[in-house]
Image 1 (tube, one colour):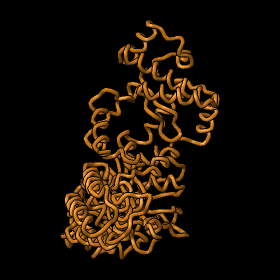
Image 2 (tube, helix red, strand yellow):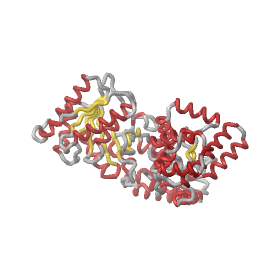
Image 3 (spheres, helix red, strand yellow):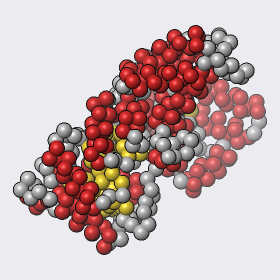
Length: 503
């Protein structure tokens, strides 16, 4: 997401290096690059021009802070303007408060979902249910899409999956009337009736939230838009969310504007942000509709729904990463008890293959590796054209699972016969097993040296880790051997890109 935009903006900022002040003459060229980058990201022309004019107004004549370079100073100005562009009015300075969902008390809070066909609305209903379940809120999801074949059954499968597998212990339930699908087109208020009865059920059974999944429709279809207006008048929802496919660019923004004019939507949920989207919809949908972005869909799993933060999104666009999101993901997957146990083992300098396996499983639950690395500052653009194969984890897990309990605890037991047996059992090669064992020994030595407290030992351990090609750990994770791409074309590509950035 935003890789091309990030790269173009970085080029514009680098062109200002070596200048003593920020003035109209030395910023104009950079702004030309920024405007081109925004247009290529599918930002509407008028908004792109106004954005650059606002940046010029803030930058004109500003003296460069002693500790910063002109390019860095401009980054700060552009960052603030990006936040202002995406932040809704009525919130705090960064637009964080207005981007959140507020629940009514007593409940239920009624949320009506709408959007174009194929925008990912049904999947998003499941993600919202999982979101509320994790918050400790009970949720009833109603199937009011009586138009699309098997839409009711599809939503029921999604919600049953959320109820069974999503984190949290709160009630998640489905409400549907499949028999009403036959009446659709004959009975004018068929969908309206389903929504009304779903809300009544949610109120009677004391659910905290009721989500209404309405049928996808084109905004130019007046008859179907009137149906949405009928649902709104019948149940008076507390929140109306518009689901928008970010891959459709400015078409998505135009349809969002039309929906907003008919329904006065309270928020937008952008889906498919994990795809190769140019990101223009994320930058302009708030400006065009006036409705704040509430959530971002970043994958297919139930938990792939992120609360929208203008400040953090601006940081991602400018290549600053989103370490906060990375830490939040780590906290969700690693409990305090697990972290304490790992800290004790680190303090003693004792790590086993079982610890490595546990840490690797936690990492996999956090999401695809490329997506996680993209949250680190300066890494996202370097990974733009690189394919990181998460199936490497399957091979590593296979090797560890093929070891005996004793072998996982004591690497000294390994010999050629054991290595061959593990390679055969895991479908790998003896070389791969040997590499895993060697790199894990390095990690053990590093943690033992850190536990000893000697500075010389720490430096020596760090150098050994670097030379082994082991992968540094993410928050709360000491290190993952076996994931190095050292010498591979992928690694060489990353190194080359970073060298270019330094120049």
